[in-house]
Each structure stands twice: as structure tokens, then as C-alpha cells.
Amino acid sequence: MIIGLTGGIGSGKSTVARMFAERGAAWVDADDVAREIVAPGEPALAAIAERHGSDILKADGSLDRAALRARVFADPAEREWLEGVTHPRVRERLTAHLQRLAAGPAPYALLVSPLLFETGQDALTERCLVVDVPEATQYARTLARDGVGREQVEAIMAAQLSRRQRLSRGCDVVDNSRSHAFSAAQVGALDACYRLLARR
Image 1 (cartoon, rainbow, N blue to C red):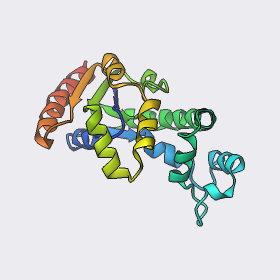
Image 2 (cartoon, rainbow, N blue to C red; image 1 turned 180 degrees about the vertical axis):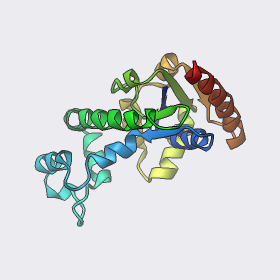
Image 3 (tube, rainbow, N blue to C red; image 1 turned 90 degrees about the vertical axis):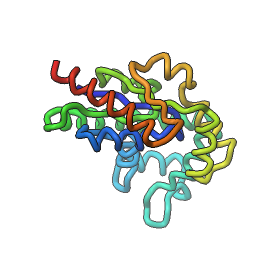
């Protein structure tokens, strides 16, 4: 069984995913796959460099993700172009990862993705779990973690579904706005539920 795990930027998706992994769940992170498909030698990176020039690359030939992010979130047309290049490749590679995980020993697997609903990746899952925090918490965590400006955080959040929209589409919710123990207790209950559903 594949569980989609999503949440807005700064919600703590990876932290919650690790809690499930500690209980034996397998997982693949769409952000990791998105980095894989723009690694040196990948066709997507060549397309990005052709469009934006070599100044979008670091000295070692890898993608300057911060520079690209600043460009695409300042121009909706550029973001749309980039998504057209990257999203199909991410989905193809995610599908291959999930097939391998489904054949493995874990009781269930997580597809961790910030854009689970926006990109239609929820179609690859049986259930969807939303990691939820207030929007003010998203702002504060992202500003502290990523070293980006408030305008860029606002642009990233505007490109994602609203908190209300995500919650309306999720089957399950983890409130990750309080302590680690509070979140872990919710994960424990959901882990038991998912194991039962996977056996059925």
C-alpha cells in the first residue's frame, strides 16, 4: 500500500516521514527525485542550462538551485516551463521507485511530496496524509531554515495549494505544530491503522 504524504513548505514532512520509517515504513521523497533529475549529465539539467545560460550552474557543473528558484518564482511563465520539463521526469522516476518499494518487505510505503495534489501524484497512492501546521509557522520555519526572503516564501506558498485545500483532500492529518512527542503519538496511531489496511 502506498500512502501519499504531503504538506506545505515548512510543515515538517521529512520529520514525520522519518517517524514512520522508524516504525518500519519505506519511503521515497519527491524532492530527492527532483534533485536526481537535474544532476549533471541529466537531460533536464541540459534543458535548463540551454534556456537560462551557464550562469545558472555552479562551478562544478551542478545546478544552482537557489538562483533558479529566485528566477522561476519571480516569473510564473518560467515556473510553468520548468514544471513542464521536470514534473514528467519526476513522476516517471517516482513510479519506478514505488514499484521497487512495493516489492520489498515493508508493510507499506510513503510517497513524500510537497506537490502531491498539484502534480497529480496522489493518483499513485491509496491514501493521502497531510502534515499540517498554521501558515504563520510555515513562514517562520522556512525563513529560519532556508535563508530566503519573505517575498520568496510567499511566492512558494502561493504556488502550493492553500492549507484549507490540502486538508479537504487528505484522508488523514498529522498536526505537526506542537512537540515531537505530540506528532509521534499521532504517527504511532496511523502506523497501526496503515498496517491493518495493508494486511486487508
